[in-house]
Length: 294
Image 1 (cartoon, rainbow, N blue to C red):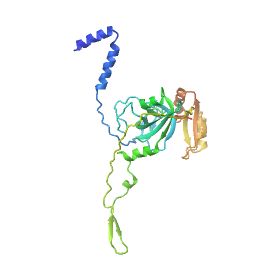
Image 2: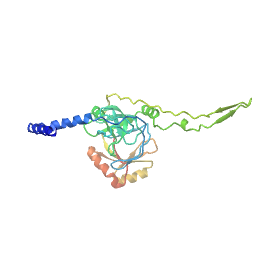
Image 3: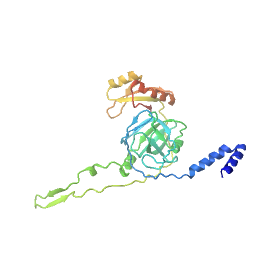
């Protein structure tokens, strides 16, 4: 059999077809290899994890809204996402660094105004210069040809529904309450009644994670200014110190959480310039900086 393959290879090489045929054989071999991963969708928060240039700290947040640079997801080797879904390049899904999983968000391409709705089910990207990684199908619908400025808005109601219905989600306050025996006695006739002498049943409801529609909507494009966010501060003096040290500007943040001032540098002409500026932030003693679009 080996001699037969060698003879076929010599013939194909002489005819100029060897590279294409070997590539096709390799592709067929990959397709014939079944995935051993079994999907088990569940709620996932996870521990802090280390990316390319620092740590990310996952936390629950249902009113998330941010701008930044989106990138494409690469093919996953284990075929299972962080929340136990089977990964597919053709699904309307994506990866986020800190949000609870799964979560539903809309992503707007700020260059052409296209919007897609995706389910975040994986961790990433590992670079602080990229805010979200989008499946190849969703990226195609957004018209992404390279890393692209986007706006991300979480669907609060849909994300809450997923968090409350999937196994692994934190238990509600009622389930955490004591369930010991409570005795009530009537003041009129002295009769007694006992309450709460049996524990609450455990809830193990599993939601069906249906595929999201493979579609996009058209909206307005912009904004387009690329900046590096150096930090959010409650006091102007602290913000001014960072701005002087790192060559940034202090502007009003309107964060709504008491962080009324932000320090940013820029604007930058393109994503490459913003990346270069982000790389310099550690030199002036700033961790956790990221690229924003305003």
